[in-house]
Length: 412
Image (cartoon, rainbow, N blue to C red; front, top):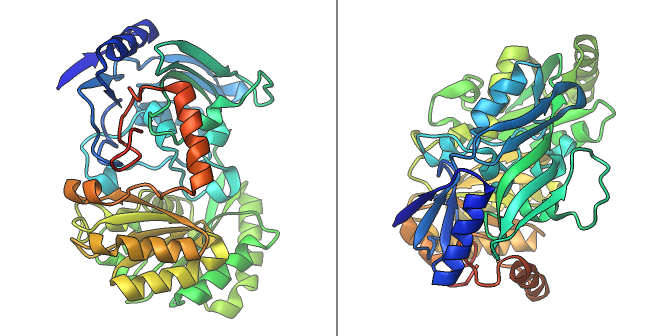
């Protein structure tokens, strides 16, 4: 398979136009850290964006950064960290879960749209993407959005590009909103709750006036890898429920004390401060208990989004029926499910339970043969699928970009 390394947007235009003329679809990659997500693609060449790695502009006082799409995410995070700033949506590092040797790029982060625990308060990647330059499946460059939050230039194409997995356009440059890092962080820890009780505790915390920025629950089975910041919380075979508060030190401490009283009916409340709290939530963000190098590394992993009130019941059903392990995030609205190895036969059952709960499920990690035979992305209702097809045809009618990644046996 040919690899086409590009230096600028003009190179991307030329590569896409040549692919259209030769009817040769392209696989779009930055560092390739997320190539194992989605269906195996029907492509003939790789369009490598890793050369588009420059920081175009960073204005800390204006809380914006403009960067080329192939720039390493880790490098950009280090740069804004030096100014005590962050991406508030906590982008996930998929290398832990997928076992890749490299972390991702900015373009891959936006294309995947996988936000971390703070999603419940700060929104997702799409909510922090202010503008983008991209090349469509026609081989034409276009620009959407700008450098301010209130931008009224027409259709908000940024929302379409985020989470499109490279099937609509090739992003070459993006402008993102950054936010100041909180001065202090406090995490309340409850132990021994079952899924339903934990769901109630997280709901109570999120419904309180104390501005919670994270709420998660892990069963004791999830700690079987025996390593990492989360495993250190499991001093015994008990589940762990985590609730995070952030802000200036005095406020975080006061709110933590008040929320601890609110949650006292659920059990004894312990406290993590700053460093240990940061480490625990980073491990949760990257789903470290299901890491590829851990005890559950051979297990297929599903990412399930559902109404938070349904999370505890849905998780219990999935564990009972599949024998898998679960991690709850977003107050129960996000469930990570690790199935026993070679358990692709459970796909229909997983999807059935998830649909009944009003959610959707994505198969994030699985062997190639499983990804060929199971719908990786949740099948859409007929009306939504038809609308999506119209949108895709408007950007890439010949399905030149990442053909087959999002639909088993399909064009896109």
